[in-house]
Figure 1 (tube, rainbow, N blue to C red):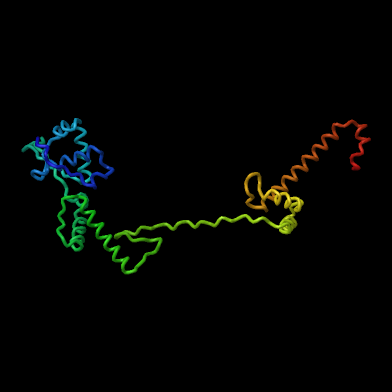
Figure 2: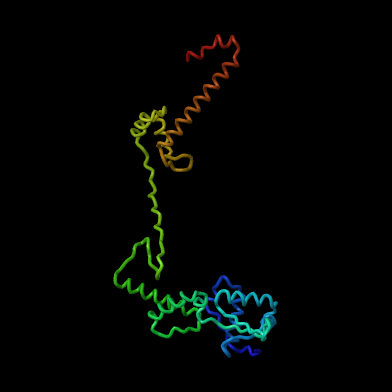
Length: 262
């Protein structure tokens, strides 16, 4: 038990399991090293706690997480006639996924793989089971490609599962602004009854390169609407200003005012 020269193995399935803490993964490697001698580890929590400078409670939690995830099994030996634990044995699971499957599914999975895999199925590395399944899927996919068979762009088969791939949204082409002719502006203003002088509008924007401020114009019909609303607002403001000026005049000035004749 005190010999720490055995090699440790932490397979990819353990290293990248997000359910496990980093210390639990490190503990798994220590357990593999201690199992090299007799195939199981009988070290107590106190041994691991002293080894890593942690509490026995923390070690117990790490071991429980490894058991729950199906990477190791835990067997307890009680003193005869009591519930006092005499020894505990930790063993590695050859196939972690198989350990957590129900018995009926486990047998079905074994029978299917027996037909697909011609070589012995007994594996010591939990990740090898995944490698075998992936190799089988890749081989089947390559055979399909060589036969010239293609699948729908919205539906791809991966193993025995169907993965739906959404179609990419179609991008609408950007409409390029085309300056109107004077005749087009006149026809539009007459049809819409915009109430503006189309010639003034056209010559104004033809002179500035059809820009609104520093930006290029996007829609000249909308700009005509804004132009008409602005002219209407300016006329209303001028009318109100003239009315206010008349109110400020004296009666004599109003009687002698001849500006209305202009």
